[in-house]
Image (tube, rainbow, N blue to C red):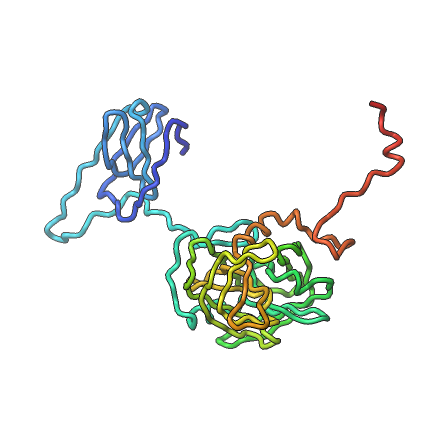
Length: 331
């Protein structure tokens, strides 16, 4: 049922607002709304319809019918049945084409609990020249890693650890396609195209903006090829400027092979992509903020990989030919 444009929605916390019997409001266009009348004012009426509250102008209402509140019978003393629709359950995440973010704040958990829940989504990316880490962002096989992990390479493979019957089953996928890459922020988007590939478990992207120095974070990756290694630390600062870009600095141990892996908060959200460390110091690791990852994914068409120009992250238009230039009409 569609309301006139003069109606506007007031989104309120509607949990527990259920009426014993519905009130009815008849509109001028012969439509009817049922729910619980919360308030009546001189120029408008607030009606709870279960999952939201409608504020309806008086000039659109022809009649208001209030239902009598039923009394509990002494024989059963049972509450009346609900006739108002149940509040709609909000989905745990909202998807922006390729990635998901949590709609409602998640509760914090221990690293031990989160590793068991998220470990399957962290993968190992292999090339003829070396290896790195990555993580799944979509069930269809899309994953994020660092640009420098795959730089100059086209023969890629991804190792995934599927959990089956309580055990880990290592599976290597060799049909891996480069979808987009941006060398300047050190990010690459890959896709597993193997015909026998299942639906993959993926990780949600979080937000590093509300984080503060001292917040606990942890990483999962393959440092020096030691797959599924977990390291824990704190966020040292979230505004470390290096080479014109802002990075998250963390005490979480990061080594070669961690590159492209996820940096998690204690809600199990990816807040950064680990990509480098200072080798002559201790506890000086860095990660690309999740906001940069989202921007890269939202604008991935601008960084689409061109098979005929593998060294560049950009597609170039064909230059005009001499024939086309000569055929141009005089101005």
